Image (cartoon, rainbow, N blue to C red):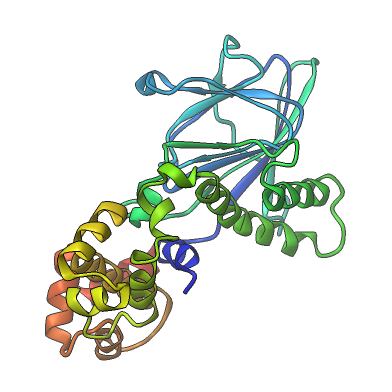
Length: 311
C-alpha cells in the first residue's frame, strides 16, 4: 500500500490554490496563516523566508532558484528580497477567467525574483501523524543534482508558467498536486538511515511497515496487537513498543485513527450509506460506528457529511 499517498488523501479538503509572484527589489510580502499547509517554489532569482515575531525559534532561510519550501502548519511568514526589507500585507492575486493560477507583482525596479506561492488544503484538526512529525518548515534545495525528481517537477512547472500553451490549465494544477508528494518523499528519503526515527524509519522498518500496510489495505479486518505482531515476526510486547516508538501511538490507537480517517473520506467524497461506511471501517453496527466517529470528530457522521459538503 502507498501509505504516503493515502495519508495525504485522508487530510485533503480541496484543491491547492496558488499565485505566481513576481518581486523586483526592494520587495517584502507579509503572508498570513493559511488553513492547511503553505508552499513556495523559487522559479527564478533569490529571496528570503523570514519567520514572524511569534516564531523566534525559526531562523530566516535564504532561498535560491529551484528551492522548495513546505510550511507544515501554514504558519504566517514574510517573503522578501532581504531580511531587512519592510514587508507589506498580502495583496490579492489577479486571476483570469478559468485560470488555476493567480498573478501578483510588487516591488521596485531592482533584480527580479519569480515564485509560485500557495497552499494545500489539508485538514489540520486531526493531522495524520506522518505529517505531524514533519519539521515546521521543510526546505529542499534542488540544485547540484539533489532531489532529481522534485527538481524535474519544478522545471516542468516553471516551463508551463513561463510559456503557457494548450493544456497548461490542466497540467499546472496536476503538477502542483504532485509536488506535495515529491516534497514529502524527498524529505523522508533524505533522513539518514543510521539515526532515522518516526515515520521516516517506520515506512522502511521490516516489522512496522508490514503492519501499517496491512491496516491500510484492510481497515475493516479484525486486527489485534497479536495478529499484527505475527505479521511483523515479533512478540506482542516487542512489536507494540517498536510500533509506538516509530509511529507515535500504540497499534490499536493508530488502527482506530485510520478507520476514522477512512470513514471521514468516504463521508466527504461518496454517497455510501452509513451502514456501508461502518462495514468498510470494521464496525458491525451503525450505532457502534457513530459512537466511535463522534468520539473522534465531535460530530455524528451525518452531521459531518453535511458540514463537509457545505464547506
